[in-house]
Length: 223
Image 1 (cartoon, rainbow, N blue to C red):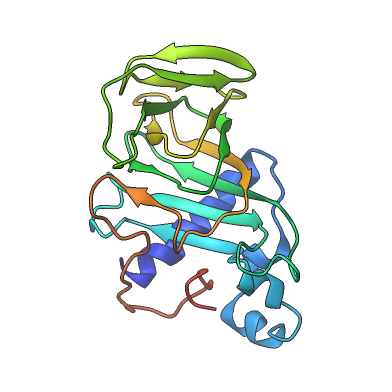
Image 2 (tube, one colour):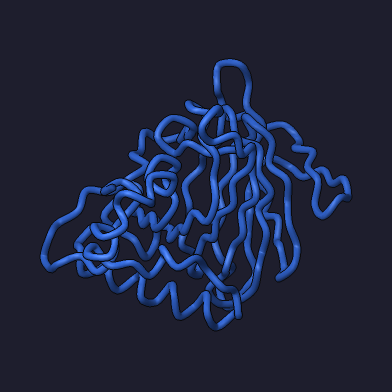
């Protein structure tokens, strides 16, 4: 991805989040210069990978395979003494038919919440011990009610709805065509995106960046 694209996407994300009257932490606005000024006092942000995360999953086609993420709070799986927080929270933004590819998490259990905008489509699959994607019915909780769906069946979450995804449950999601961009909330156990994403395809979690202009923001991989 080009740095100019990342700068633009974060600017657009801030405007979109603000349009839903969702207030985000001050570190989401920090420039590289401010990060340098606050390097002594912001170690928790860096150690727990709080902040902006823009990815095209190595596909060089962000419009069709991409995600904007802002990690708001998180603990640390590797240093629970220093950071005992057992939970994490993220904001994600998905555009119409812009997929987050099929994946699951070994450690993290999460609620995915449609915070506003269009309809969010989630597709689900069970997995087995060999991490194969199964063609069996999937049982899942949506806002505290039990549902059973066929493997890969589109599950539509309207604004305000949420779904609980357990460990080992393959899933992909995207905003439904014709309904608009979606502001997604994620409330989960502590998250480590370096080691806890099992993509069905062999995809990188973070992008390569072409430095075609100066960064206006710092990504979680750049602290």
